[in-house]
Image (cartoon, rainbow, N blue to C red; front, side, top):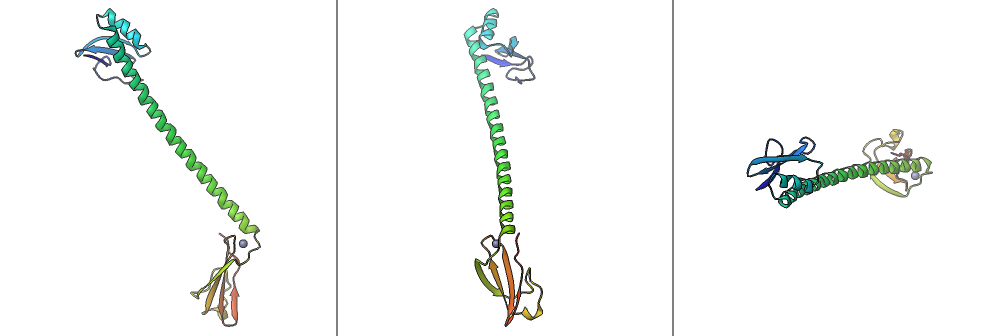
Length: 167
Ligand SMILES: [Zn+2]
């Protein structure tokens, strides 16, 4: 049985650490060659050691093909990881730009109530002035199309109109 290995161990070869690829036959180390050799060169050397050149060349070719496939898979995984990180960065930047655009629109908006709802008074509302006369009734919440909100505390004839609140 023809197997590859390093100088010490059959079946063990560490690309980048082991500089020579060794051919082992029946658990015996026979000869080694540079990792830079082509499979055919291992075949030629095998013939000089009385081994079947084609058989050795094909074992080496299969090993190199496996190494190339593992490297390609690792490269693809790394490329995918980088692409995901790039996408996340781009999405974060886009979200920040969108928030900044919204804030700018809100600062420039003349604010008008687009929708309103009424809730029970729960205490002086954000943006109001704490007018005691307006306390204890209801609170109107106006929402502008830009997202700004205005609270108005109202009780009978008294209204405490807050200022428009943006994020
Ligand atoms: Zn507005």
